[in-house]
Image (tube, rainbow over all chains, first blue to last red; front, side):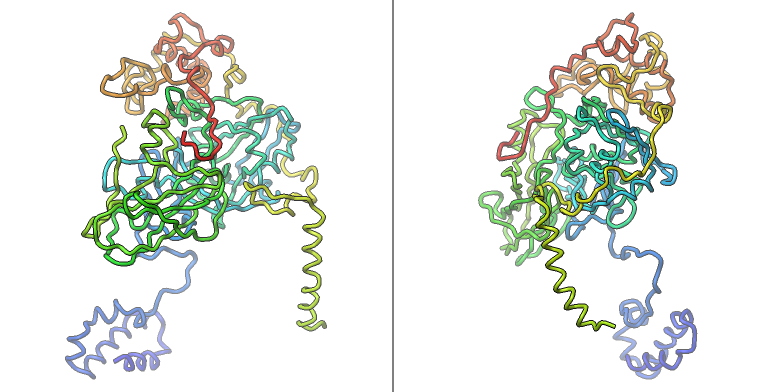
Length: 415
Length: 202
């Protein structure tokens, strides 16, 4: 049967490709049916022959942009204020740019890069304006690092995916110019200790950041994963502040003002602060170490036997030192394998090979970073802070494995 | 023409020399937090000459921030009575009548709901600086018409919200001089994060 189709295709090489895709392919089936009779027809329908076997159908031609397979349904989970990355659908450590989480305070603006300017002023020797093209002329840097919203925690029911629980973290390779390079160009005064970063969106969002961090590793980024930033990520330029809470990574950056004190903006006073033992903790910049098992997780199904437990771990204070996995509800812990590269302030993939015996259990992971900090339980966090709400919640996440192979989140009551 | 083998051999000879130069001439210790290569910081001119100087007019056009010490406040003044009227037309739809209970959150501190462990965060019980109220309203409000209020309207609204939260008297005139003197009840609660990593859970 195969031979016949090939013969026909060879005979008709002079006809157009379009014609071949339509008319000739149908004819092939007709010939097959005539030559080989009813047996073939019964075993393999015409529809199956054409649709199920990609070797029997000419594919699409090269295109201008690639597209995700129609079999892959990767989508963010949007609300009015944010949109969460589908962590359970990812492999490796790079978040596809169109699936990077979103959080903004006045919508995504449309900005013409040829008109956009960055003003740097305040306690500087030379207040200056840089066009996007100017910024691209400076020496560039690239680094792979995570970006996480400090409000990245949800609980409350069993049917939550990693996406809902902590989908406000994503990872990209960011490219841009070091802020220290720009600071050098404008000549910041030695007495400048803080700077204000302001966005050019409808929220004109602002955050104060210590100059020390700006001189260390902050980037004015214009590219993400090899192309210009996505509009949702701050096109044409954003601040990228490695390891620090997402809100400080001001998008659509239009202004930087050097100062000798913080500006006490709305975001850093009334919003991204948290009650801790009767006080309000402010400027909690570093993202605490965290990990989550993304496979198996809700709503996936598992089968008895070998399962490779997979997940990601990260810390805003440095590299991941180790990840431990428990397959007996936290009674015992085993070291997971870390996948290279293990980068500073970056999602790091881990895996642990487990033979499931089919009995109900709970699986979970915990990370220890290079400062010696180990991801706590929710109970530890609540006890330490005397509060059960607020930002910077990074608890161990447990998944319940049911005897039927279903996987459910384990919500812990803590309010 | 040099043979391919010749080029390869030369490369092999030169490569270690280049490496040696790179690492022997610099006492560079990469910091753990930095991913930038040693060569990145060498031979950088004192100025690249990219970009242009900003004029004072260009700065003033977008320099809208206000600091707790009042730096950045424009001329103008506001009183609660006028702010109340503006609030009713431009703000109440999102923040509730009188600033209580709207879909986008209360701004005015009210009776604590006894069923909740903690009251909703409002300007009255949570915002540490009065200047932030002015800064934020002017920068981003109303949500559906951001930046549409005049400085005078922002002063009136600031006076109203502080007065409704019983932080200032209804007769208090908010000006660039008086606003920084307003003490907010929550301010003493604020402490900077002092965590530095390590085994302690805080």
